[in-house]
Length: 286
Image (tube, rainbow, N blue to C red; front, side, top):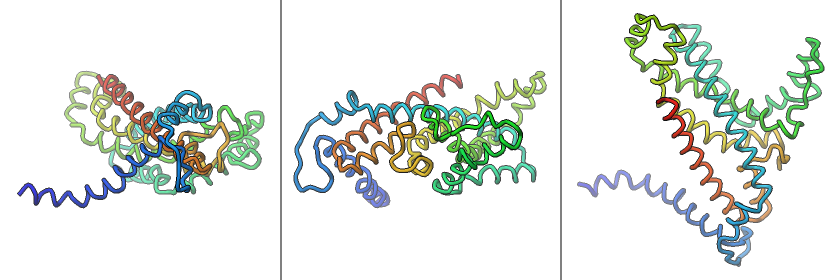
């Protein structure tokens, strides 16, 4: 009987092993070599690639710094915006359902489409924002946006928030709709205002949704590859280079062994950040 049950899982396990476990093991093997990706021979270099990535690679360190900036802005901004929209639109009315659809709409677009939209918005010469600023007499506030090396990654983060906030809003709405109305009625009876109800009822009760939103947003932030290439070009400038684009550039330069080592550090970084975020979320929800 147990063997028959195993057969049901066999196709999924085969796919998981063939498309995840095997490539992961191969990646660990390649990370200890200097293979260029197409030669029939290569040398074993041991942990040298990993050591260089961690301690001596300024390009990788710059990409990691950019990625952490991007991650911080997106996680905080997207989570806060999604929760705000969910609280405002959790009531089931025709108007709220229409607004839910409008806010969710960007999520169904492709990353390339979103990149073209925001390239038009950010264009320093005829972009939407600078045109509006000129029209209302605030031309002195005009910006180069993606042309500013120090803040370019933050403007990309704004585009990412617009892209996926509606998707996270749906998760929060589902969480809010699961909260028993008796809790709000009891809070109202005790004289709690809307802020107190949110703080002591809504916020603690959406803890599972918040954990899911943060984890998913973190993965999105680390995988914002096509959006950044669409906005910044290939290869992206130093101020817009993140871990995914850095690894891609290394692969494109025929350094597969070194790129594999970067990928391992990349996975460790994702695991560490996700763990710390989950711990912080548990503390925040008390």
